[in-house]
Length: 136
Image 1: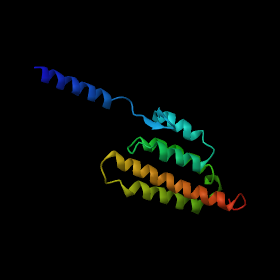
Image 2: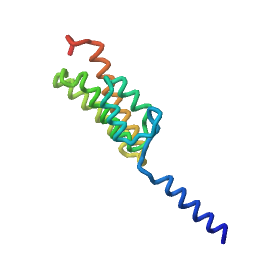
Image 3: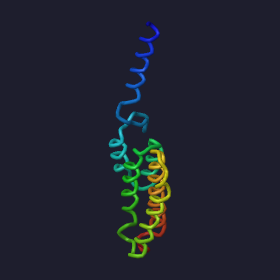
Image 4: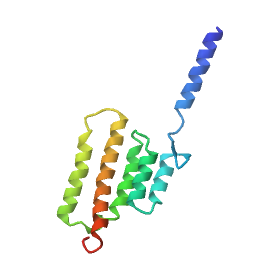
């Protein structure tokens, strides 16, 4: 009887530990996805945004929200300066990321997709910043 009570207590404790809102230890504190997105939005550019994404990633579907914030941050460096054909190529690369893991199950594959898309945006940003304002 005592053993059964202990087991029930252990199950309750473990279920409570597993069920709180998702959070990550990021910037030396526990942060929710919304707080991490706000921190990404507050960064000074694409590279710091990507670093924060990498440091604070969940390794699961929660990374989709973080990756979208990084994409927007990086796109600010280049998207308005792309010609129609370049925008089409950029969209195609993002689409490849979306298709790469589409047949895989598990939330880690949503994370892989989010990182792939953010990395594409980061490459475009790096290229645009390297070329300078005249090339954009």
